[in-house]
Image (cartoon, rainbow, N blue to C red; front, side, top):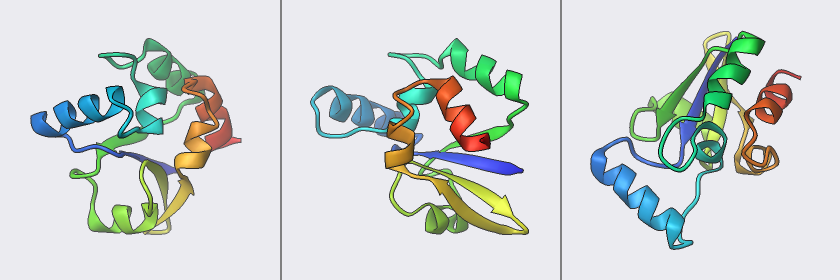
Amino acid sequence: MRFAGIYNADGTVLGEITYVLRKYTGRGHCELCDITHGTVRRKPGWDAACGRAGLDIELLHRDEATPEQLAAAGELPAVVENRDGQWVRVMGPAELGACNGDPDTFVARLLG
């Protein structure tokens, strides 16, 4: 299985600043960020959950994703899986939000 998680934010410095400002003013949100990151850094629980499950997932900002990944993803954030050379959406904002920011819940739902 080959997964890619696509954040609803750009990976540039300006993109990161814009995301933080939107998040803390209530004008933007990324459910995938809530799962993988704390206030500033990546959650240690994220790496631990992926390690326990043997999950290898590439995390991308929307400006780093391929056109094919973005087309499959639809509304961001999303997780897409490469199946026989085609990207397919497996989780969107609602499914990611249902994980309530918990990496273990995310991994269980993705692989379960």
